[in-house]
Image (cartoon, rainbow, N blue to C red; front, side, top):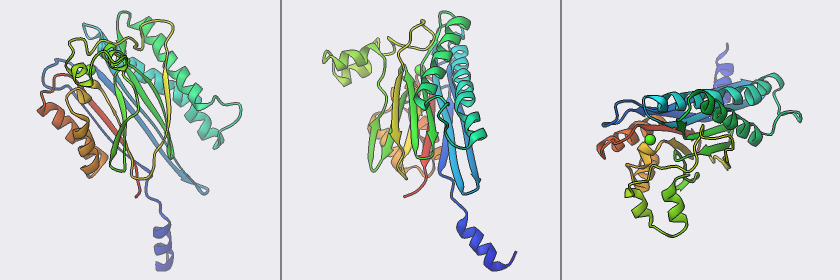
Amino acid sequence: MPAAEISQSASQSRVRQLQVGHVSDVGLVRPHNEDASLIVESVFEGDQAAETVGLFVVADGMGGHQAGEVASALAARIVAGSLMQEVYIPYLRQATHQADQLPLTEALQQAVEAANQAVHEQVPGSGTTLTCALVLNARAYLAHVGDSRAYLYYNQELKQITRDHSYVDKLVELGQISVEAAAVHPQRNVLYRAVGQGDQLEIDIHLLDLPPGSRLLLCSDGLWGMLADSIIQAVLASARSPQDACQELIAAANEAGGRDNITAVVIERVGK
Ligand code: CA
């Protein structure tokens, strides 16, 4: 290839739109890691298209005798499998979203309902949180149940996207206890909504834009329960890469005591 063509093709090469980091750690106290996480990232370039599709799941299981880790892993697999079938494979076949496809929010809803059913039937007596982000280029579609969290860091600000489905969060909402009291409340881990605990499940759905330079964090409560939002924000602001951010967050949570399993997934939309 002549030099002129090489330099032209180099200038036309695109930077990947998403960068992803991920760490899951058992922490310093628990014998098992009952968190599950699943990441699927697809980069497609061709025929003027440059598409990025990402699927990110964090689930935190509960229930004794290792049922928690079975429940979280099952929920993560089922939700990802359903979204691959309903969203990703049709996207590959047709390149554009077709009218006969499920709307994305409904596809998310259906995926979490399938996970709910599977955990309810296959791991009775257990349950799991589930926070799932389907990223299509610059947009993220989130489905959420439980007290894992999604945060968006952008422009020097950290915003918590999801609400915890925990009793203490309800008490804070009702003005009965303070955020500070909730953080040390003995029942702060008790959830009123979890995947796998009944037929009817209410699922929170959020849509958000990912501006260039933003970082989306999905994490289990072993992370946010150990670290103040100001620390999470500082790490997301300063870490050189999403993987560095995850490693620094897990190290900080362990330094603070590591009382629970800790999972962090950071998705960065590349750009200024
Ligand atoms: Ca946990």
